[in-house]
Image (cartoon, rainbow, N blue to C red; front, side):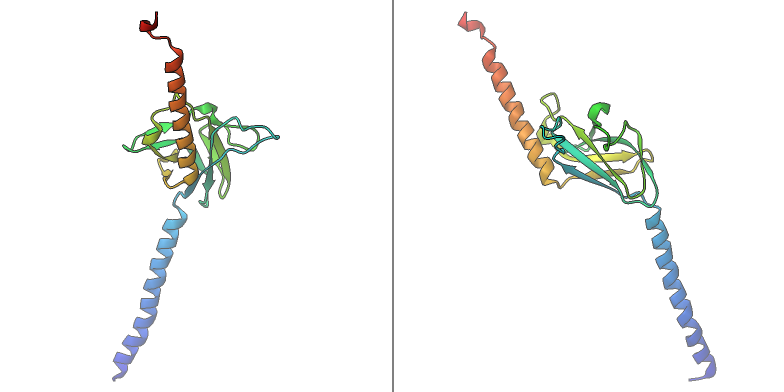
Length: 174
């Protein structure tokens, strides 16, 4: 092996290491600047030993290294459409304020909603979502808590409909 080949090999090693570190740094920068929200459906918190006024709570956690502004929260449907929760879904002191709201870095807040019979078909709801003002959408589709609450609400909706039909006198009974 000649001296020039040895110099080329010795020079190539730091060059390859520099290329690898450059790629790692670029990936780290891209990840650092990405919006990372986590959506966790949960049962509502019980306050002061009474029943919670809502059926479903959603905790929104900002894992980003910067604050984000959450513009919308709601249900994600099978067909890809979204139903935004009303503004009244916010609760009490340690919960989120009216939307849009600023969620600081590595902070969380909870929004809650009353799941009632006026809502769309519960079988079409497949998840919950939160959308930031920059357009980033975080969706949670795999929540056992959400499935349980929606199944209960669907059963209650069917019972309510049957009870209303049973209470309405038919015209043939007269």
